[in-house]
Length: 222
Image 1 (cartoon, rainbow, N blue to C red):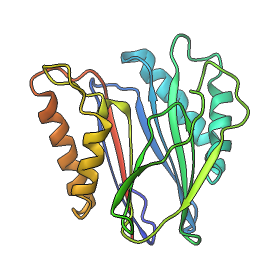
Image 2 (image 1 turned 90 degrees about the vertical axis):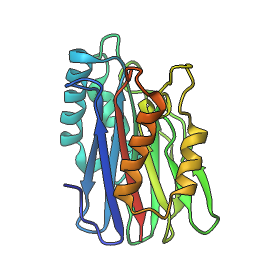
Image 3 (image 1 turned 60 degrees about the vertical axis):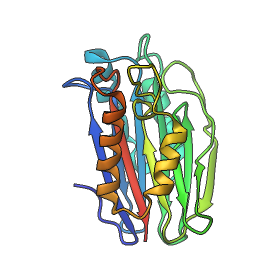
Image 4 (image 1 turned 120 degrees about the vertical axis):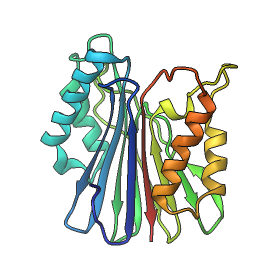
């Protein structure tokens, strides 16, 4: 089940490549005042990635009260993981949607940029902010960015398994194709939109074995 927050519609999907995977997402509710979220992707696959994902889950449980400040949450998660990930690393993107102020704050740890459909402009933009991945480096501060939210906006958070899905000709699905689909299909109900997107990506890679997990979070602003 997904959080029930007045003014928001939320839907997510997780498609693991194997029975155990390294993609992860979590939500943090703030008494109807806002919603924090995190989406992450551990490098590699199999049991090592799953163990690091378990550490991420534990870190989120320990530091969930930091989620209203996405940069602070990422800093704490990085300390939690530092020198514990071996040859692996974690990319993560954290956001906080403030219901009262109708705005979103966000910070990034080496993750692919989420996309947002802006209803007023009928355009798709990146939620662009930079930051180092979690685990290998000590980094005290993760930069935060923010912007206002308006009715009709749709936010799409995802892991790179979505845009890096390849077909038999080695062509990636790609961010441009994703942005075009988001603009074209923004009026679809959110669950239908997400499920259809998974189907389109599956058709793109065809009979080729998928090489990565896929996690997706969609949020509509009412």
